[in-house]
Image (cartoon, rainbow, N blue to C red; front, side, top):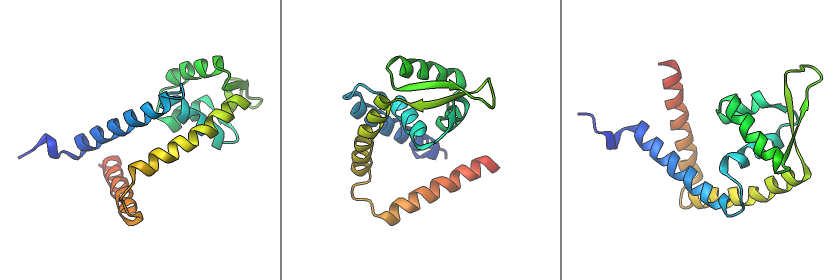
Amino acid sequence: MFNLDDCIACITSRSAKLLADCFEKRLNIYNITRTQWIALYYISINEIVTQKQLADKMSLKEPTVVRLLDKMEALGWVIRENSEKDKRAKLLKLTEKGQKIETEMLDVAEKFRNDVISGITPEELDNYKSVLDKMLKNIENG
């Protein structure tokens, strides 16, 4: 018989929400949201990234990313430039202020990661990732 408390989708959803909320609280101390930091991170690690590519990486709709970037631009963290190759595309770059915040928040993210995986062996973590990957592939193929 189906039991919602044993449902992998429900367990995963609850876990993801709890982890996201806890990470959000740690970042809020520094006046940055989890979504803002994730955007800063992806812009930072990609030499060239467009608004559409960022939306895809963050699994967000483009209008949501536009609003996010509007706020981040107003804070002086990012700049948007027109692409020379595609006039419709906006290229994203971090300002010095944005780079500084992204780098500082890497330490917060690393500490959070270490707290989350405390007591978990590298093998257990690899197994966890492998099982999640298999589940996602099952859903994509099924």
